[in-house]
Image 1 (cartoon, one colour):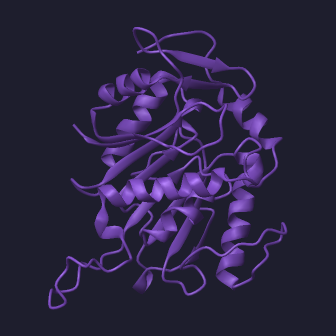
Image 2 (cartoon, rainbow, N blue to C red):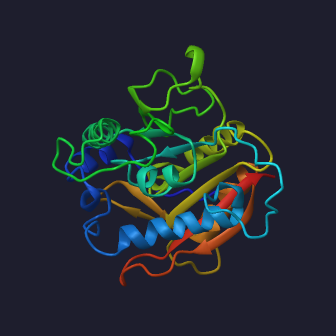
Length: 282
């Protein structure tokens, strides 16, 4: 693993993001009102559906009409470093039943909860003035459970006590907060982890996968490299930007194998390339 100085500082990162607007524009560095959110979310959905086509809500023409219905178990996803809930609302709730949302920045987690609560109540505009409609929350067919915390200490197997929950509730009072996940989604947040913290988080996440088809998805900026892994430190938000080989080095150390990797196309010019990795236990 690479070892450079300086390294990400958790508190410095949280302090930086706490100064940014708690909306799409804030969490996306000023690109929240253009094409980026839609291009990014559609690319993410397509990437996940290519790997887990059973998540599609569109009937397959290849499936016999007399075939038995598919398994109807509830599909669970974890969205870490979730900001105001953009990936939860625009990607995951379109494909899965239940989402656990983790975010360390107070204004962001508060805004995510506000959007979830507004969706549950059927209100078109939340308290912050944003139009929201999280799929499956108003009719309580889907759920979102909110946790406030940082990746450095979060254990997906035992997440602790949630802040809140909207939408579906388990029957008979069952507690599903320590159930395992079909998808663990990590986007634009792993740069806040030092190398050792990144490997340890991935190892904890690996233990939280439900079965052999379950996935960890990493979607992050990548920097260019020459003859080996490269890591660039950004003083503004106290983060690393890692190169492709630097991420692959971390995945290997965490005992994960890459099932699929793909560059996200269609994003504005001048940004770092964004790459998606689908990972399973090696």
